[in-house]
Length: 126
Ligand SMILES: NC(=O)c1ccc[n+]([C@@H]2O[C@H](COP(=O)([O-])OP(=O)(O)OC[C@H]3O[C@@H](n4cnc5c(N)ncnc54)[C@H](O)[C@@H]3O)[C@@H](O)[C@H]2O)c1
Image (tube, rainbow, N blue to C red; front, side, top):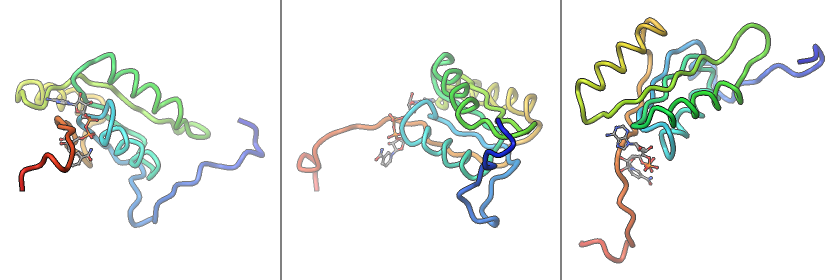
């Protein structure tokens, strides 16, 4: 990037900054989880774990976040995709072991994995 390019500006109040925080999002391959990842990155997070059921999807999303949010200078987004089924304790334990190995700690977690039933509001039972 040329020297005259503007530095990346975060859209967050300093008191709400996620700068240098290690953030973890489950169900992050799409939907709300994906947007929570974006919000963390826009708030200054540089270490992000993208968890969802399928490894190739989490890896692709993590790679995309790292590429799209690359910062100036030597500070880069370190995003890792991890296959994790949140309904399995063993899978969650393994995912967090991987995160701890990669980043050393966890600062924030959003549990967004889940199943959405789409149906008309008129079909809901009162
Ligand atoms: N979208 C809404 O308006 C809304 C409103 C209220 C609550 N919610 C809840 O928020 C959660 C996310 O909603 P969304 O709209 O992002 O859904 P979505 O279907 O777009 O995304 C959910 C993600 O979770 C993943 N997932 C599902 N089961 C998983 C498991 N066992 N382990 C790991 N990952 C798993 C899916 O693969 C998917 O990528 C759901 O629990 C939903 O019920 C959503």
